[in-house]
Length: 379
Image (cartoon, rainbow, N blue to C red; front, side, top):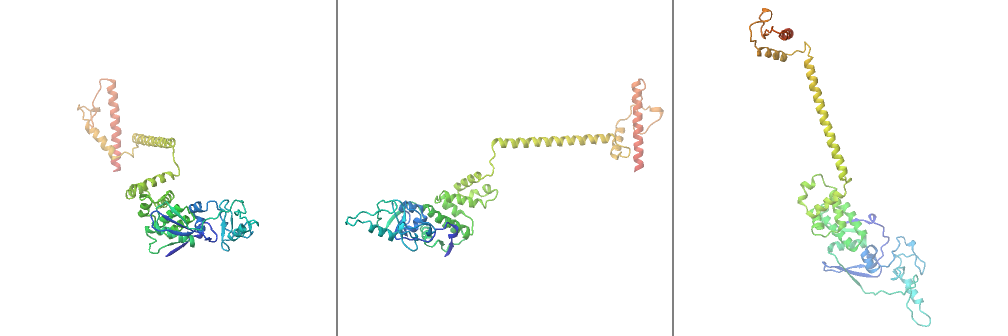
């Protein structure tokens, strides 16, 4: 059996005080009565304290910080039994209150009820019979026994037959946590949480989720703890890829928690501003691309129009040649009475406009011929 020492993980409780009173309790789903010392369980369990010792003042962790109101000695539960007043809750040595009751009787023989040395209320004697309580909860019998063992030893004892790397170990711890919730014992809960992080070799699995969410045995605090631990190992895309294999209630609460823990919740106005800014930026980029493309196109045209003689390419030469052969002359008459190879210039001598066109065409052919000759020399 593995033992986890948890005293350092929870608040210091001081020396164990058993007291002389014993209480029995049982739960609805377990056919067994559990027995424990009243002072011991009331020390950490708020449920038992409210039921049995509601008005009792808590004992100081350091006995030197509190003294008996009768003998003025320290209230140390290791040295002497301690009782308390039901009315005001003042702690006092049991032996001292017995002496106090004897001395409070009058010499005349008339017995008067003893009073509390602090509040002067009548000192009421509690019955010495065993007290029986019923806890209205569905709890695991082994988990209850683990709790009682922890009360007497401050150690969480879980059987070695349960593999620490399995989800069964986690389920057993969660059942112990349910006991802590039922009896309202925060110290035992802290011990269980410490055991989980120290001993558990696996993350919370489907059996733990089923016990807490599907079967409904986990309280709000247990569910919150499970969700926190589970989310620590989640990866992006979990809801899309893996959520179908888990209980719907768990997935919904997981999604609610994930949304609640978002670092920044943006308002509608903020989202609108961001998207409008994004769209405007996109439009500006597209306009800039179009402007750049237009500039490049104009540059290419200008470069082609201002092409130097050396930059004249074979492609341009072929283009010029195709233009010359594509427009044959309708007349056999040629400029200056001479026949030119290739393109022929029509004779239009009747008007000044025609003569200007002839002159322009002759100049064009002259320029093209010079370029062709230069290209041939380059080849």
